[in-house]
Image (cartoon, rainbow, N blue to C red; front, side):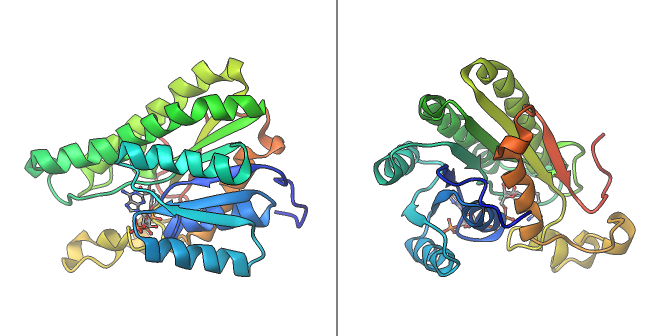
Length: 257
Ligand code: NAP
């Protein structure tokens, strides 16, 4: 992207943004001129992320917010509104994966957690943000889905199902929010080097690890920063006629089906 700060005067909230892909997205939006609110469960992580982003010259603040807790979701939006007076961009990035292995061996508790955090929390936070996004007349929502949402990745079947559901939310909301001048899009990363992907890249069971050379045409795992530019583009005026789309960022890995 250019050095023009094309997101100046926009306010963005990014969930789960103190590490990994969320942090990279917060940084990119901030470098492109937006004021950014970062958040995650642990206060230490929030403080570290805010410090690191301020060192980059970004207008940023942060708050502890667990996306699975209704009070925290409200607190996150209220914080952004109190601090910056409005909300233009919501990036719903948080997800967990408590289960690896055969889908039918998943416990009820693991299934509930996946559904609650990866799908329900994303939808409910978005629902709560809509009236604020609408007020700006140019609101944007971006969901962080996954390549696994298009075609299930072995060993993470339940997670894949949740990411497919997120794509359904993306498409459905894009239809219902278009007339309210809110665009809704998603990104679908492939295998990106973060703590989250270690189960596929550093699994103690060697056969569980992704065969990078065989499965990723570009021949390497992606970096979190490589996911961020697409989000900045989607929320920018350059993408003003795009809604309901999902951009794959996967090194060519069995792209969308
Ligand atoms: P990550 O590096 O493990 O980062 C996780 C971040 O989420 C941390 O900031 C963590 O901070 C926060 N977090 C965890 N649980 C949370 C919760 N309940 N509420 C709020 N914040 C929470 O993960 P990542 O790889 O960047 O993944 C980010 C998104 O990308 C997820 O939606 C994931 O499904 C998606 N994705 C990742 C990959 C990949 O290969 N990495 C591929 C496709 C899609 P605290 O510990 O302080 O809460």
